[in-house]
Image 1 (tube, rainbow, N blue to C red):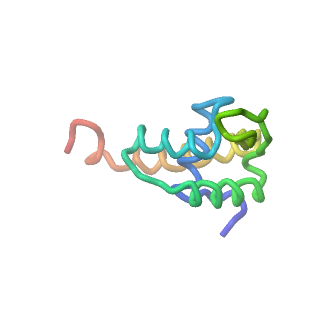
Image 2: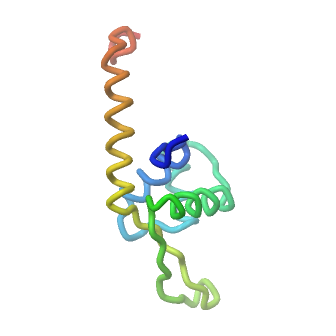
Length: 110
């Protein structure tokens, strides 16, 4: 498996992190994944996937300021790197190339 391969959940987290801009952190990602896909995900699955993406160099994480409602704990925010953006585009282009070769699955044909 190559370093720039993205699993479906990794791609989903990265896409939503890009969409959320500076508001992407663990629990917010869980909520947004649920809102966008209807899929329930655990915070543990998100954290494990973010750690894997960080190791690949596709995301960076950084700590925000502490808040009273979190008992003084800080949120760990996720930001997709330039390399991560390139990998997302590569993944999108590969999938679109395949979809475009299957006219019977085009919108309006099913």
